[in-house]
Length: 354
Image (cartoon, rainbow, N blue to C red):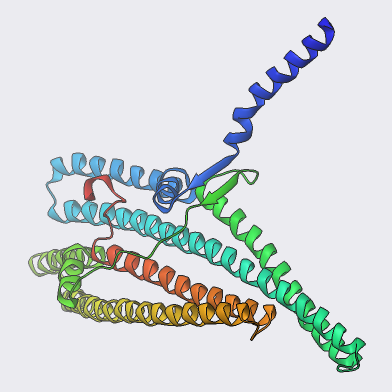
């Protein structure tokens, strides 16, 4: 009896010890947590972060050395190199955040798609049984059975492919977040997005004030102007002076070109996100119509006017409409993120930009 109690105690102890480990292998994630893990644990970003640190050290070193020669050109050149490194880090971080959102959305959409295919499989199994029953009373042929079996097999194959893709998407997502492959993840559902209310002019003005390419172009212009003045003062050939003057013109054109590109891109962003919002409104109307139709089908089914299979088809139509709406939600999330990064690339990425 004492031995049995001892064994039971050891078993309970083992369960207590192992339970935290089991639960630690499953992580519940929302989108904000996924963003945080991307910025903290992604290997590519850690590499970019170290490269930026090195550029910051080099910038301080250049400034210290420049105290002796007091060269304005060297000072601006060092500032340019540091800003270019910051831009590289910010671009890397923002691209990773875009990937995180895209992968997060793809996983959720694939989950919903799999559920729809499961319903299709159930319906087509019922339809196959129906065709077989009709065959038994001479209303259908073996060819009809074969046709329905092929439809069922196609849905099963597509569902299996989606499930394989689903596992692949989760594996890539875990790698994105710096998680082990063995870790299980549960993603929180994305709700209808919060809609932004920005004018095209607001997007343009914010982007012009914060665009890193524009700032690099301005520094490049200053460098070209200094080089041109130096060549005018120092004994230089006319050809060298002309080349330096052309470089000033090129730098000015680059600033003008960058400003125009920002305005064009802002216009595209503004139109795209408003079109997506309009699409969401249309899809909401479509879902309302699908739900109304499904409710009518349920009443007709209760009255014996339609079969269970007809009702099942109505349910699948509702699921498909919801899937279309969810795709539109994800598109809006992506476009909203792109606009926010376009307006202020460093926000939420660099501490001094927050």
